[in-house]
Image (cartoon, rainbow, N blue to C red):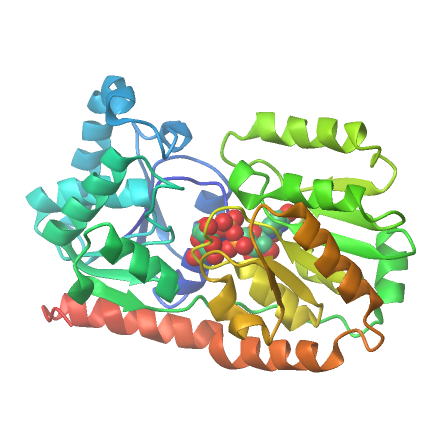
Length: 378
Ligand code: UDP
Ligand code: GLC
């Protein structure tokens, strides 16, 4: 039984959708209605939707626990539903932090082995101290395994007090189709402008750092950008602030906000450089691998898994986080590179194919589930 709190589809949910493809006939327990609910049904899972979970995904991850206190009745209601549904299953698999916390409480009653697929960096840039303590305490007591997508995510879990012996690193698998047309033809088909073009492809959220790219663009006359993605988890104020910032910097003509798109891989093939400007450590970063597969040069901030994915700078360029001058310089260098960084791009594509395949991820997760179901701790 796979448990997820949100029914919006961000990276963690795209990973889950690939994982469950191996588990036809399994159950998805979701807190709320939404695109993930539909996608799960299409994938062949039975969906159980909570009666009490709607809106719980909007509770901020850095909120202090007392702020969640008024919701205690509903949270308990969801935990009871999870416990009841768990009794019909062999293993409970929590795919998000909120899902894990409630599944852990439910597991205490239902006594089913619990796997936590932890898609977050548990540190003080992402979570309040009470939440960090709660997560590792519950993990150490109730999780049979904690699956993380990268070494930095594993390190943060153990630094927060999580048991090292629980952790299993399973890199995310990413598959995208490549369009055979040259970038210029794709650009024309998509109605994108001529001239040097940068792309950023993340949901809009302060820690994803789109504002740093806008500041960098102010120092790069003649360079255009597409900002792809939308605010998925209540960050509408940040989305509005980005528009204001672009106007204030005189970038309105050069920056296009495209909102959430279903054709990210194609858009990536159309730009000259993909920028990943997160200002807090990234647990993984699917878009990094997508850009590597697209054959597009990548510039990413050196925080979290980016260094691991980009082979410490050999498969992309690393810049310090929240440093718009360094980002502007890296963009200028990339745009000026005479061969378009051909060797680096080839290395990146090969690395993405070798290390971040979907099948390898599905197999690794299936092996964890099988071991846990068989009662083995490793
Ligand atoms: N994505 C998308 N449309 C958008 C923006 C993003 O389909 O407009 C996809 C993107 O291609 C990637 C995922 O959403 O596969 C985001 O995953 P990532 O791990 O990069 O970040 P997250 O949002 O999960 O923190
Ligand atoms: C989370 C992380 C992202 C990661 C995704 C899938 O949403 O923010 O870095 O790629 O989960 O693991």
